[in-house]
Length: 369
Ligand code: NAD
Picture 1 (cartoon, rainbow, N blue to C red):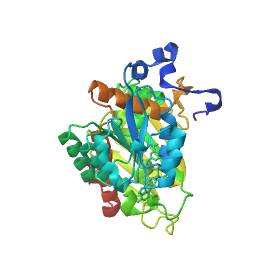
Picture 2 (cartoon, helix red, strand yellow; picture 1 turned 90 degrees about the vertical axis):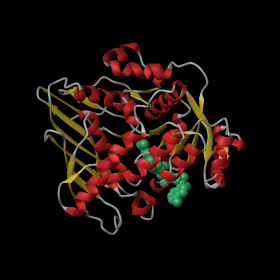
Picture 3 (tube, rainbow, N blue to C red; picture 1 turned 30 degrees about the horizontal axis):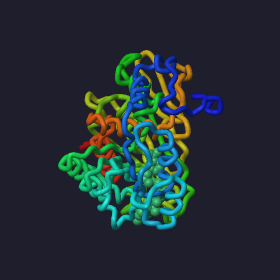
Picture 4 (cartoon, protein in one colour; picture 1 turned 120 degrees about the vertical axis):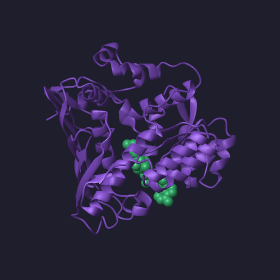
């Protein structure tokens, strides 16, 4: 089991990674590159000022080097006043959902970050791209793969970059797992097991529990990380899935899934296991290769990631994942180079999610894509 030593390990900004730490993993040097780019900071407007914007993204934007919190889009006038004061946001950079399209005429805003309930992701991504802005859209990318395809197509047509809020692609422990898995450092991958979930204790009427607004339950919200974890460890795309589910609180999870278990099949027949839940506190990714093993736990949150390789704790620092993620995207926009987490990455996960729901209905193995 991975021990938890966060109390002894400070969170650091992407700009202050020590050279010694960088030497441990070549992939980490890209974090330093993100933070060292000189020039103008790009303006980000957060759309939707709920839990994630307030608790994570706005604070992270106080630690970014390539972008800053320039604007907000909210349906709640009181939030506009509070945020304007707290973050010194001028009135001209504050929009609501109705007048949002006028953002097209605002040169302060380069990037729109969609942090809304899932059913609004497609609409606001498309409106942002049509307003000439580059877009970051939160996970899960949309209600289903078809919506993701529409979002990608519009952003392409408008020549705007689209990225998904997959912060872990910039997290050192996670990047190490990608390296160990994709480069077969200890031989072929022989086993992957992963789970992500939390025990839902929130509002029983929240959008997260409504199928039309969230698309689904624990699978959409938390399972997307376990699916990603498997995909980025192997560096391959699954071709089929078989899933089952368990519901112990049917009154709470009337419309959406509570706990889902699945097996993914990869080309050549290799199979992995995964699970998601709104009723279990899981966050792990365990990998075995022919001559070694590694794991992350916690594997997917932003309160600290920990991991081990062959029983030895990984030596990486904690970073502000969202700051690294947004800085990298701003850098990609400025340099006109592809993001490592484009819309296509969100689409791949949603194809798996769609097939899992299909398998839950049919009780059979279903093809992905
Ligand atoms: P939230 O419910 O706290 O916030 C949602 C915001 O949308 C609120 O400000 C709300 O007022 C606004 N909104 C506008 N129209 C709405 C409507 N019709 N119904 C409900 N709310 C409406 O949710 P959140 O936790 O901030 O999640 C927002 C997005 O961020 C989701 O896609 C979620 O999956 C994602 N998220 C990502 C992470 C991560 O680690 N990447 C963490 C948390 C949330």
